Image 1: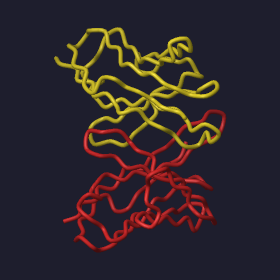
Image 2: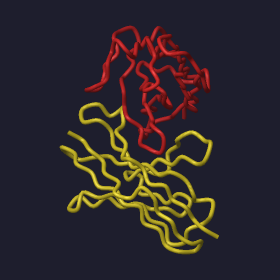
Image 3: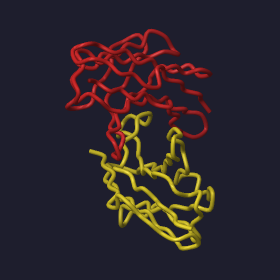
Image 4: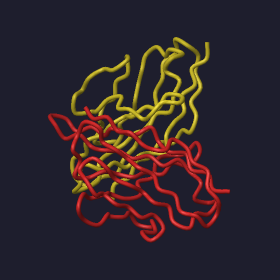
Length: 116
Length: 110
C-alpha cells in the first residue's frame, strides 16, 4: 500500500490571502497524485490530477488559476488556493493510486480550510 | 462519461438487521467498481473492490451489469459499521483517478 500525508491538517486564513497545502507520498513514488474537494456531508469531487514534472490536469469547472497545483517531485504535490474566499472553505483531500496487482487509491487525512 | 449514483443520503438500521447500500453507475465499457468507507475522524479507505469478489467485514457487493448496479450488502449490521460509504469507479481511459458517488451515511443503532 501507500502512506499519504497532508499538511496542515487544518488552516484558517483571511479572505484574499493564499494558502498552500502539501501532500506527501511517504513510501511510494507517485508520478501522479489527485486532489479532491469534499463539502460538508457531501461527496468527494475530483478537482485535478497532479503530474510530476508537468502541468496539472483540471476537471471541468475547476479554475486552474484559483487552485494552483505543483508536483515538483515524485513524493510531493502542493495545492495553493489563491486569493481565498469564504466559499473556498472546504475539506481538501489528496490521494495516490497504487497500481500493483490490484488498483487501490490511498488517501491523505485531509486538510480543513476555513476562510474568514 | 462515467457517473456514480447513490440514491440514499442516510440509512438507519438496528443492530443485527440486514443492510443494503445502493449504487448505480454509468460507464462506457467494463467498469471496475469499488466501495470506500470513511469512519468518524478517519481517512477514506478501501472496503472492497468487485474484481476480487471478496467479503470484507461481512460486506459483499455484486456487480450487476444488466442493472448497472453495485449494491453493498451485509446480512447483520453491527454498530461499528456506522460510517460514510462511497461507491467509486475509475476514470474512463485513466484508471488512476476515481469518481465517487455522493455517499451514504450508515447509522447502526443499538
